[in-house]
Length: 213
Image (cartoon, rainbow, N blue to C red; front, side, top):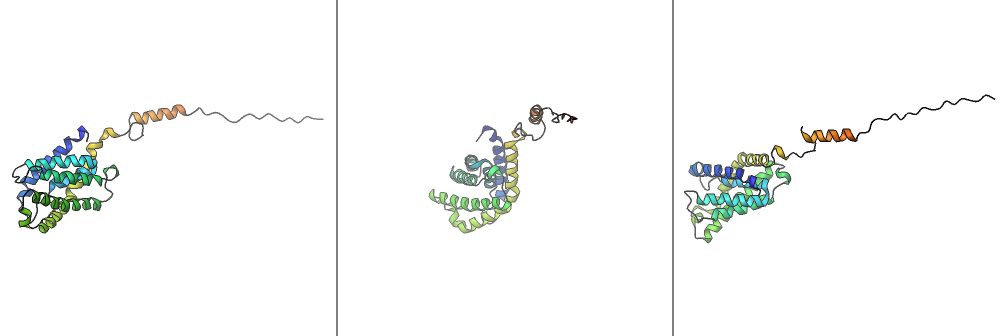
């Protein structure tokens, strides 16, 4: 990931973490909690690709592991979001643009289910049995429902901001003729210089004077 791509993901991840902890975490919804951080990671991964998605997911997950009131092992959610960011980045379309909203929703649905199962599996390996008491099936279904309902308001906005910040107005190639500037002027001058002066191709035909005998 280029250094100029660090600022925007950092801001989006911090905003998502603040909303996740201060708003969504206090709603007391049945089952799982809507995972805004996962949606931001998926949206950025669909623009940045697998490497960028992996780095963004690891950073966001580590912030969630360290933010209070976190009560799980540090690195647990970082591993989950790292894998989700990498997997979502593999599904990035050409140019970072989704052809349809349904494809992005399918990516979010898959990430919601797999991340919940993976988080519970890692928790079972380190001795966290909270998922057994709540019910793994209820967690998966509620996570799928909440994330899919929240995705149309988050993922397209994240992808749009990431694309505009990533490309920007300076990415227009010089000499392509798009917009005004030196590119259009250079092409105009080259065309004008290469155009030869019009030459009158009509030649005077000699008069055929018939000789008298």
